[in-house]
Image 1 (spheres, one colour):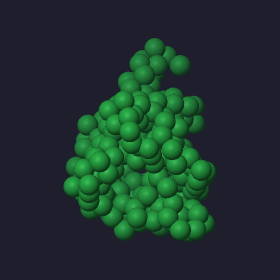
Image 2: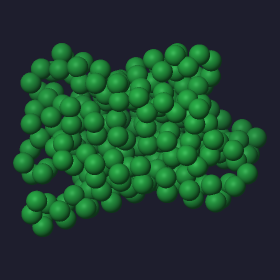
Image 3: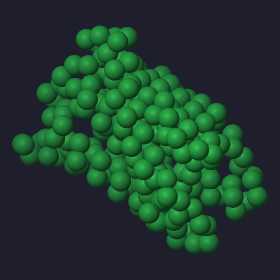
Image 4: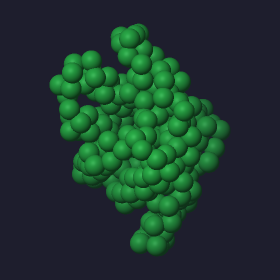
Length: 233
């Protein structure tokens, strides 16, 4: 890999770290603050926080890294042949690092909070497992539809993706937590509690990505899945 490609990958990894940090800090921070404030933010406010921070990070770092912010999204792009396989480790490591840094800071700030905003299923775990597959499938399907290669296209992409995150958090958050993101669930589970059902939030989003690529294939045919451009190397 050339020095220029190394530099691009380094910048993209930093962008993924920063973007995922902001996502987890704001999103799980809203859950924590809602708990300690006696419900001042509300469920609707938490859902809006997740959607808005995703939208903001797409506009902030989308040009640099594509603003995946999520191992399931990176996997979806790779399966759809829009993202080079060799870049997956750097992206996933940056996403996990950003999430852990955010949860670590929240642990320092809210030392008495038990779960740190972890995703915990309500009711049968099988229901949350299926729900997370479907939610992630919808999210990644939308992302594939509003992106070119592995980056967003047009000024409305951030609104579409952030809106989808907020929508899904609104209706599914009370049951599964509407994670759709292994990094977002892993960090608070490791530094707080609620890791008993962590497998749901690691496996289901990855399966959801597979479903989304298949749906995109069926809807868009060759327009959906194409080789990643050389410039993304």
